[in-house]
Image (cartoon, rainbow, N blue to C red; front, side):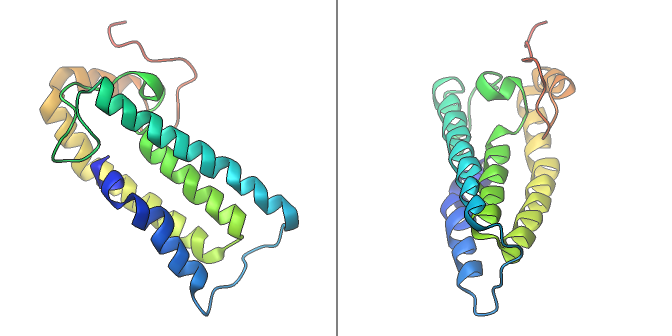
Length: 158
């Protein structure tokens, strides 16, 4: 999560801006005024990201930044439904940008970032969390999916 937090402005603003500003950028599709519905996942994704960051601060007693990680495993809020809601919020932001700007370049970027985020979570975050929080993280991981939310909230001891 620290990976996403530190690079947030670059990932969600800087690189999309560069893609859209490119001289060879072209529309992937044209949906007219419906493109403004892309603002909905951008706003929702931003809210998800901020909410989860606050959970890290107030519940986990840390931050999403690697140098100041949460002292407690956060299994509250949106974390009761999906293990990586900050990343899901990021995916929503990027998907909204694809729709809003109707961009093939942004779609390719979205898919690339999904792959990078997934590899990062698998190779770095999950092993680190397992080492840090042990059995409680192992139980949480067994009960809550990585990317697809549960329909009912996870209960830590039940």
